[in-house]
Amino acid sequence: MSNRFFKFQTQVEQANERCIQGEISPEERDNIVRGMSLVDETWGDIWMLSPKGEWFRKAYGSKQWVSGYPPALVDMTSVDSLSRMDIHQVACTIGDCRQCGLHVERNRAVPGEGPTPADVMMIGEGPGANEDKQARPFVGASGRLLEELLGNIGYKRADVFITNVVKCRPPKNRDPKPDELQACKDYLERQIELIDPKVIVTLGRFSMHRYFPGAAITKIHGQAKQIGKRMVIPMFHPAAALRNPKWRAMIIDDFNNIPALVEQAHTAQ
Ligand code: URA
Image (cartoon, rainbow, N blue to C red; front, side, top):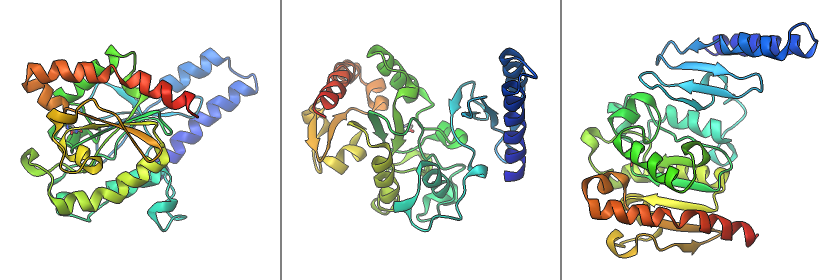
């Protein structure tokens, strides 16, 4: 499979080179590249590569192109420990992880997506059925609300890094168990280190308890706390907000705090 991705990459690079050499115009190059895509034979995802070298993936069953990186191109030979992996190597390792029982029933692991580094990182609970099919976080009803909440504060989904405390779907969407949280802990730690967010937003109980053990979300939601070098702000889970209109109003309010926290973190630098 990596061979197909590599060949595809070479073809895009050749079109780019022809443009640099003046054989074709930038418009012709863009038309050639735009017309090229590669279907992942295992998952049915469609991949594209821009002339600038940015990869985009349209997950099977999704209409959205999102930036990503093909696991088939990630070089895993050079790394022997998580602490030395880059974000793509971490994602690949998660994709093959068998450290807890969740791998047995998962369809696809969901490492997370977004820019690295990013000012804001959102940490949810665990993938649901849609996420498990697409290998993307928050793509169901909760994801739509999350995008709306981000839109309200002038952010796009692609501006923030989104992930979960567990990377594989707990069967029937049950709560993650302690050993499952433990098995994923180091992945999340490494992602935080690499993404280096100024602000971490916890969505729901399990990510909140990482930073505020034993706290009740109804008491502390929206109250940012400096933890180490980051601000952490606990919020209701979007799924809870969808069930309860009162909490929906609260999460909208709590989201309004995010831009100011990011701004403060930048000025404090
Ligand atoms: N709920 C979560 O906590 N995470 C997802 O990725 C989707 C739904």
